[in-house]
Picture 1 (spheres, protein in one colour):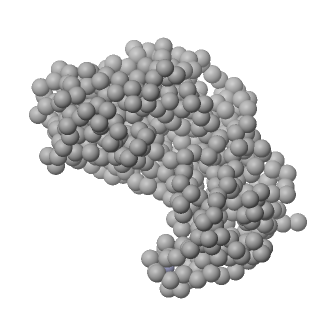
Picture 2 (cartoon, rainbow over the protein chains, first blue to last red):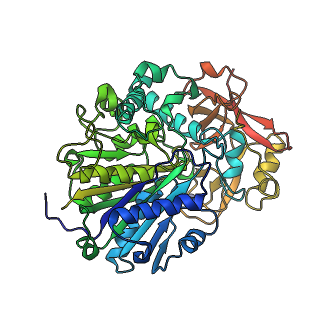
Length: 391
Length: 132
Ligand SMILES: [Zn+2]
């Protein structure tokens, strides 16, 4: 165990157990997640002085949920970068804590798209007509699955990536999900089953797509002083990077993601390299999302992602890079269509040694969480957080 | 079956102070794009300033209407629509649909030409079809 100092620590993490919340409100899911994470840390609502959330709570920014929880805050941040918002919130919480703006930061997520019957990937997502891009994209079917599919097809064209290689991402996730009693899909699947599942948006099949689930999650990030008073393992945040990628004024290049810019910043800050990482949570909205990030994180050269993920290389215990050991968004949970929260939570479990024994990475003291939120071919955010077990 | 296609109401189209000219020209079957008067580069989607150099003055110019498919997909749950990026001969890529084609036989790099498609609400949008 190294003695590196972190500016802040993740001391509480909680994944809401539900996957279908017909009997709960969005605010309830936030609150139950918040209370779960605070209890995990050994803290209470009255200890919270910083709050972070995305736009998954209805209303202006954090107003409704902060008032609902009746928090007394010194610092509020409602940055939204889609599904990876919660990774950026952790990074921003570290900065706020280091700047003395707060000492106990609470990050929450909650939502119920499944109960509300949302067609997450195949119908237009919420938008405002005054977005300058909307008139030039909405008439053509700019749905999420199609956006990621165009990236997959371009990757195949440029690098020879195959549907079978993409399928291995889902196969690995399913191998992990079989051990997670709360996973929505626990059945181990084969490459053949993935490539033979119905096409949703060519070349992506149904089993290349993540699940739609209700639920939520929360994280508690604290100052070093408070962290040392708590009984939980110290999970230090040692590197952070964030970026956004759009269409570059029409100079579109779908072969890389915002992670290509975010990752070097995170690795540089942490003073580690991809070779040092023992476990990786990688946002898996679609199989192509994982493959693209693995390249952009530097786990393999650009274009080699297909070969890297094939043949079980992401399966814990046998592969070189154990990923998403909870089953990820592909099999376990993708609460409110926003998988960044559960990515951090599983990385924390791995660093604490609290993952399922069948998928726990031995001696896991250095982990990474990487996420892409938004629409990969249109506009998306990217965030990388590097975490280290320090006690 | 989810409807993948959405409709955009005025004043975001014909009445839009920044891009209304584009939609009025499209209604007459003309495909115009924006070019920067300072750096000379084209950009997409149209803006009043240049996203490449930050120049504050851009002008409408006629696009050739030709291009190649950069990438595409077939929305199996959206009625088989074919969203695509087409790289125009002017060098910029536009998000659009490929029409009048057998989607199964399309390929990246294929030559396409602009067509105009009338929406139910009267909006006319530029789409592309394989060159014959
Ligand atoms: Zn310019």
